[in-house]
Image (tube, rainbow, N blue to C red; front, side, top):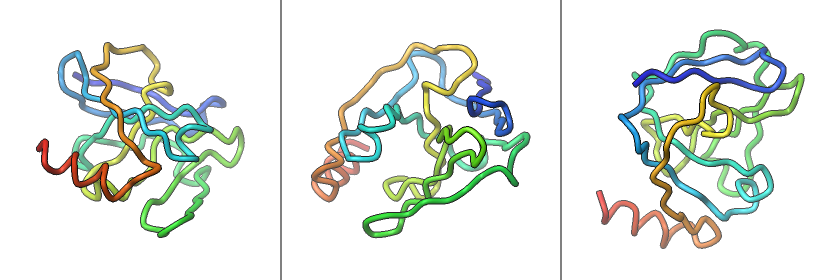
Length: 124
């Protein structure tokens, strides 16, 4: 299923291919996800296309620096980013999709990242 989304001001726009609903999603409790209400929908790099706004994106890294948090330098919204948990995929914020989709949300304990990642890998 094709979805479209982007940032608040419209500078950053993307299209992505996701599974039919309910779409798997992660609800992470780490500091940055909790503060930004980010609901993760993992999209393989090959299934994601940045339509516009590459020049509007700014980058923020913290902790290990492995994840690259991308946000619009105009409105501040993080509509997608490169997570360290899924290096072959973008994490798209379900809250930034143009049309809501039915989600199958799984909790991800980002405060205890190593254990949560091991549990996620064991489930795959």
